[in-house]
Image (cartoon, rainbow, N blue to C red):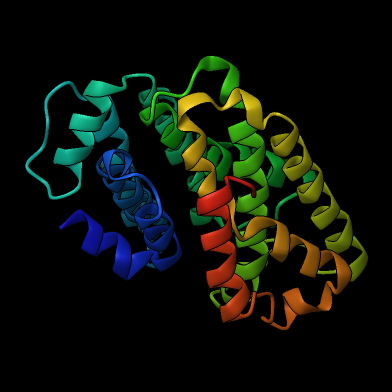
Amino acid sequence: MLPEIVQRGDPDRFAATLALPSGLQGRLWPLWAFNLEVARAPWVSSNPLIAEMRLQFWADVVEEAAPRAHEVAGPLHGLLTQAPALRAVLAQLIEARRQDIARERFSDSGLDAYLEATSAGLLWAAALACEAPPEAETAFRALGWALGLANFLRALPELQARGWQALDTDPAALRLKAAEGLNHLAIARAQKGAMGRAAPVAVYGWQAGGLLRLAHDNPLRVGEGKLALSEFRRRGGLIWTAFTGRF
């Protein structure tokens, strides 16, 4: 059931998970399904109170000692029992998603903090679920931050269409932000040796470099909704990253 939920809601993450060793896949399906539920929560209603209630449900799930009878919350509880360090990381992710409800424009530092709590935290949670050593945190968070920025820039036109003017779309500002993302990617690559047994989790960053380079070279792609890799590059990049470990 969980793989089907992820396949419908996050096909890129689904494809990357299938590229992982089978022993790791089962640990991550609950995390990805949880992330989908939390990401959707701020958009389920135009009433902010209802959206807040949905987020609070997941905040309670993360904190509670007993499992809930829910198709995602139940398996998530099992994962949190195996890796209790995930609780604090996921709690921060949920809190950051309240920004999606407020739908206020990010300052530069505000976006940095949002990406750190959401995408960077999520990838670090995945690494923790796969027994990453403590010294791997810098690498996974840097990679997650770069991936989060790439995905945020890719989603920006849709967010604007839904009434959230989340970011300054001035080309010069977007180019600077993309350069910051590429710098995070460079940090992750430099720290790759610290990833330990969780190194396969870095496969999720397979599109980050390509998307950020496109945004940097032609920031107009962002506002035009054309920030995307070709199908050949997308599929080929996943295969390359899965087999070589290079991202």
